Image (cartoon, rainbow, N blue to C red; front, side, top):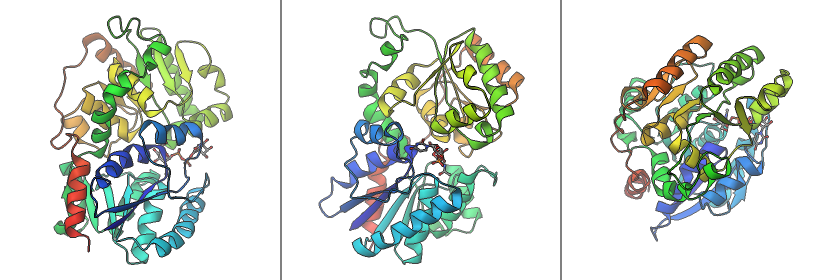
Length: 369
Ligand code: UD1
């Protein structure tokens, strides 16, 4: 079997690392890696290849940034000849970014089966670009690998035949379990002064991430969020690795000063190992990322999601996640409650056990012709 594995943006790299490692264990599987170049900065791409031991891509489409139509269209145009040249038996796409949809659609039009890892998640909010990517990717894919039972139900409701759907667990947890010991040794917390003398005198801190267009492209909303986070920072230090989109939008809205000094410590985006070290010891995580809701659930760290919905409901019903929206008072109340009372460790969902990549490769080897 020849598999063409695609990755384009930061969260994709975390998901392909365990997949590639599992694929390479089989002599009868030939794997080729395509990087679309959607993310290209060292901090958003190369650092992840290094930390997650991903081999250099066989092909880099170098599409770069652009509007949705431009970026998606450019990936399709450049990916089509690659599929023609390598003639894979399956194209594997992960997550919900523009590169995911572009490559799944290109494969489908060329009658090459597409496998979607992280299928079926739905926020039911079509103003989110990722929701459109998820819906369409799942419609054109032949193998739908789901992380949680709600995703299986969503796919069935959309008329996808049961034989295409496989509940395999969460591939990000494969990476998390594999790299957690190395992350702890990375010294990220020591460098930021958050741990003195190993882990014994660990300091409390809140970890914040923010990059969803609905939160950061609207200057007024971004200001409100940063204000309430600054108030929280007076009780417990806040560490904020800033995504390039957020940095750009904060500057455009005249909010740079809120990222300089004060009780919120804004730092450059972190690599995978350094971020995982910070995540695994945080007292509380505030985020609008999808993946971080899952990682905090796997780690048992309290998480407040600064959005009105989640496509990952199991992180709320079983895990440590609370969806609190963006109303500053609601964020304040939920955060201070966690800081005062803590939160008991919740359960980790079934199949989030570090063996998802192995389940995927077994199914593909059995079913791809
Ligand atoms: C993309 C994904 C989003 C994912 C996020 C993770 C889509 C629609 N969005 O959003 O689902 O959660 O990645 O990070 O696919 N930029 C850089 N360097 C880079 C990449 C981007 O500086 O390597 C800057 C550019 O100014 C760019 C902006 O960030 O215009 C946004 O990048 P883009 O890839 O369009 O979307 P993200 O917000 O990163």
